[in-house]
Image (cartoon, rainbow, N blue to C red):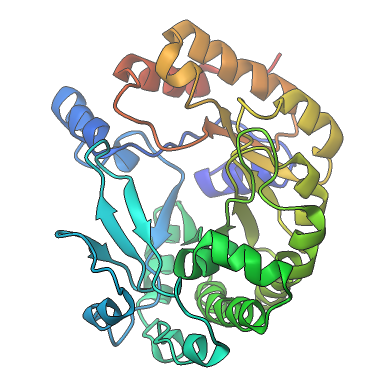
Amino acid sequence: MTNRENFLSLLRRQGYEHVPVEFVLCPHLQKLCKEKLGAEDYEEYFGFPWRRVDDLKLADQDVEKFRKFYERPLAEGADIDLWGVGHEKSPNSMHMTYMRHPMEDMETLEEVMEYPFPDFAHADGSHQPEQVKKIKEQDLVALGDMQMTIWECAWYMRSMEELFCDMGDENEIAEFLFDKVTELSLIRAKAYANAGVDVLFLGDDIGMQHTIMMSEELYCRWIKPRLKKIIDEVKRINPEIIIFYHSCGFIEPMIPHLIEAGVDVLNPIQSECMDFGEIYQKYGDKISFHGTIGTQTVMPKGTPEEVKEAVWKNLDIAGEKGGLFVAPTHMLEPEVPLENILAYVEACRTYRRS
């Protein structure tokens, strides 16, 4: 099989010949790989099976217009993203930020409706088909990445506390905001689908370490139908597209809802929260998985041999038909030894199905 054939067959649970590798490195580990291994581009160095296609390019990228929404000014050096969300630097992390919410103090629907949302309807997507073509010509999988799709996109702007209150009160602000972010996500998703990507990666964190973030009732009222709307439209354009969905934390009660919404691959099955063997036994005939190797436990704290054993154990669970794109469950932080990263790669490359 070619790389593309192997990857797509693995995730469609139709068998596979080799185990692909993938992970995300923090800036510190990127620098370390460059110094120790000569890896200028670690995705290329380790032979990742996919490459990302750039999102739509907004005509208006001036984020200064959002400062007026912060009655308490943002801290010096803070960044503002294209949604107007403020990100203040953390002294304890190289990449995590303290998030500020531009809609937090809004009290009326009119205020929310007048907010300058990103204008994806008039954004430029002319680069996407050519990028997809070049990626596929290299026998790589073309990936569209939208891992902030509905829930996170909305609460980042409104604040989680305020949005939960809106949802509980059946407030018209929640209805408008969720509809708006769904509309904008749908524009982006359709552009990726029309450009011909193989994989569209959606996601919203809906789980915490030991429980779901909201009730199933709230999820099915506010999020699920909007997610299904996006996936249905994307699959109408391209029935063969594979939909990944990311949510950290414990989300087992939500898995049947995600399957019903049309998700094909669930990421990351956080091993500290869920047992992959149990999850695969319950749902492995309906959905595939990406992740399962703990970034709170075995990757930073285990030995290289323990990393390999975790990889092999989970691949054995999935069996010959596949259905598991095994990988660390989240970004690898500075405390992860380089030896454990190399052990993960070696485990994938030397795996022999029992």
